[in-house]
Length: 356
Ligand code: AN7
Image 1 (cartoon, rainbow, N blue to C red):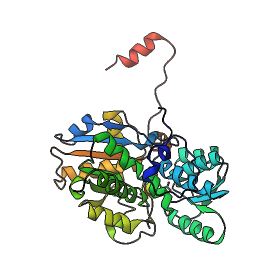
Image 2 (cartoon, helix red, strand yellow; image 1 turned 120 degrees about the horizontal axis):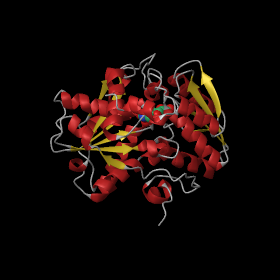
Image 3 (cartoon, rainbow, N blue to C red; image 1 turned 90 degrees about the horizontal axis):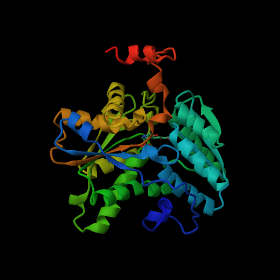
């Protein structure tokens, strides 16, 4: 049968009201790619898989939650949705709202959103408003405005976002036959780690009574300049090259900490250099180009394995790569030398490519 999207596939496992009217772009069913070259580079002896969420319709995992949130909103007669965003939520909300015939408004931190995300939000017809402040300021504003006006909030405070995003855990279990030993992923506003944990608990619980032995340990990874869950307090001026996770007061921070603890995992931080090095390594060893934030989970894994704090020998590890590299091309092109120019003659080409 042809694929009909996440709500069609997993709707019976999601807590969505019956008034929901499905809005789908056939999101989900993203590949789980075995990454043997990278596993070897990290010392080997374990199975590493990349859950490539950048292959969702708008280029990030946000589409999983957005199909659920917008479907619920449409069925309730909502005409306008709003979100604060570091970029990916904005593009996703705008696309699903467009498909549902709704208006979308997105608030973004001024100058801190990657080009592909901003362009997406505009292309899908959102009203884009820059806030002279942080993501956290923008989130406070959208919460306040939706308390006052009949506009639907589609940030991950919206419970249906979490329901939709649980489906990534379901897919991983379906594909592997059981949960992996470790799941590593970036943490920003902490909706995704919350969703994965809820998803694994629900789906593995269906399959066996001895739940705890079947659940993965969670390794949540923040950027060092935006690591409130590692520091134990909000960060007023978060800074990181991984703008997607440039968040100082995660809305679901408490739940994220609880999920990590319950799973016997943890939340750690990595530097911007570690993130960019991993972005490059993944692209060059595996042909998988992700945006910087999406490399954070793997950068955290590499750090823990190298320091001996995480023993991966014989284990199965899934790294969630949340967004596509095309979202943020400038990170790659800003420091690079312009490609060489040659005249349109074979001898000139030969001279260049055979030189060394
Ligand atoms: C690529 O779009 O918060 O911990 O406003 O875009 O669930 O917030 C994006 C977050 C990881 C963190 N990777 O997920 C937004 C936004 C990418 C992201 C995260 C984001 P959460």
